[in-house]
Amino acid sequence: MNEERRTEPDPQTHVAQAVGAFAAHVAHSLNNVLFPIVAMTEMVLEDLPQDSPHRGRLDKAVNAAHRMQDFITRIHAVSCKTNFHMERIVLADLARECVDVFRNNVPPGLVLKMGVEAEVTEISGSPGRIRSLLNALIENAVEAMDDRAGTIDVSVSHTSRVAGWTGEEEFVTVTVRDDGKGMDAETLEHLYQPFFTTKQENDQLGTGLGLTMAYAIMVSHGGRVQIESHPGAGTKVQLFFPCRPKSEKKR
Amino acid sequence: MRDLSEMAFLVIDDNAFARQTIAECLRRYNVTKIHEAKDALTGINIVNEDHIDVILVDIDMPGLTGIEFTRLIRHDDDRRIRETPILVVSGHPDDFNVKGALCAGINDFVIKPFSAETLYKHIVNVIEKPLPFVQDGDYSGPKRNLDCSGHDGKGEDPKP
Image (tube, rainbow over all chains, first blue to last red):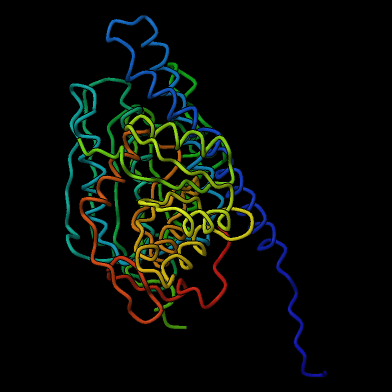
């Protein structure tokens, strides 16, 4: 028929969907493989006498398995930008939850502060994805302190304009600021590159996916991420979440 | 500690390692009656033939998915079968699947990998604090205030 419309496939969308499906498959398969390792090792660990010489080795195995689990979650978050459920959430509550978990586990001398201006404002988002993202950012900030004394500040506020953003928008902004070692210009250039990490230094284990995940998650929320950092002067990461979901915007 | 030793469990998972690991987790809490099925249809046959107290089902399986299985159980004519507690045990860290499963009428969702203790706590929670069972339009399952548009089983469920 003459009126039949042809739509050309968008090659980028196809590639993104294929990568997303592949990542979901890999995540599912690896989690299935990891499941007996985690469950069985933890059972053995629970049954071991407290003074068993095997305890330390098994602890390391369990920790490694949990790191693997975290890695799988990040691969999945980076690659699957479409197939997740969005709901109305209060970012302040979510941020407070993440900070509370870390507060009990930060090294001595490190102060974790929480400031909330946008107490009740809701955004449309995936709680699971945002929780992973905030945990990764706070973890980065803790590691940037290199076990020195210092402060990590997490705040949730309103922002009405973002530099480089066209059009009027209202954002709820989550800022994670540390006064740690900071990053040089070369490191900043590679920040969003998958598997780029500086954490091999000092025996830290990095996946190189934390900020790639941050970028992907912010894109999927119609928001953006900005990072400022200077060597020796700490790092500020800002996540801007639009107050209105995409579907409510004027065309 | 809640005694699970007299309860019958059905574990449905296409992955043999996963089935064995779940069974091992259950045995740790003195469960002895464990039925295993490698697909949902085998699971439905077992539910019809034996008394099952709790079902643990994976989502992503060849043939019927765990979500489709749950809908069939929740619309069974036999009330005892219809109201059997169902926990999804899935390796998909994807909250779209969590909502799809909740909207199909599951009682709870546990993400693999998990420890025996985590599974035990989820099971005990479902048994000791059951939500009232409701049949409301197309939905049959524990009472929840969820917006299930797109997850009501009328359209095609997105593949996990």
